[in-house]
Length: 282
Image (tube, rainbow, N blue to C red):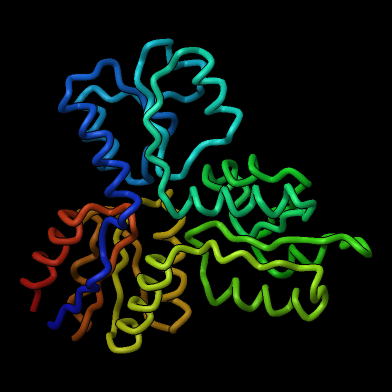
């Protein structure tokens, strides 16, 4: 059996940065340390940090004054950050630079009076943060069909943006369709992360060459789910797992070549554990 491992599999720059900031606080002995919701979407990573004493707060009110709170890689809504600061919480901003850039682009365009059209998952924490920077109203959609239900107003100006981990090909198609209808009334913001684009492109390239594909990462990770979706779109059988324990080895054995990739919030050790198992199959 041949196993092709994606070079882009594993942590992206934003995730690395966020975890390095959290590790730095732990090394300094800072206590207590809170994160507001999962710092990244990987249950194995979160479990490791919980064992080190890091507390996941369900709401901002759970974080006491004087405690350190790490802002997750996905970012948080502006009003949440403001509330924590006013209550004397020590904030450590681990928002991914790509997400921060998207927030500021949205803020600039909507301050100028453009209404935000945001391609993303409404319930995702990154999207909630992005929406807090929209000053002229916003509409969130996850497909062109849903966008087509939006009542565009004559003379109204819009800006189109995307959750940073969305499928770039889908976003490009949506932008093209909207531009044909709105022309100069639409400004398209490039907010999809290049790392996401490269990861998806490499996954597609591998999927076209192998008989079966495995995508590793948290089930709640949006970018990992989309990675599995773009692979499946190539008509290549695809399996999304979190750990090596979930591999259906008897089924996998029948495929001569297997591709292996992972989401941006997946530790390398989980990918390597699966690779070691696959490399022993015959």
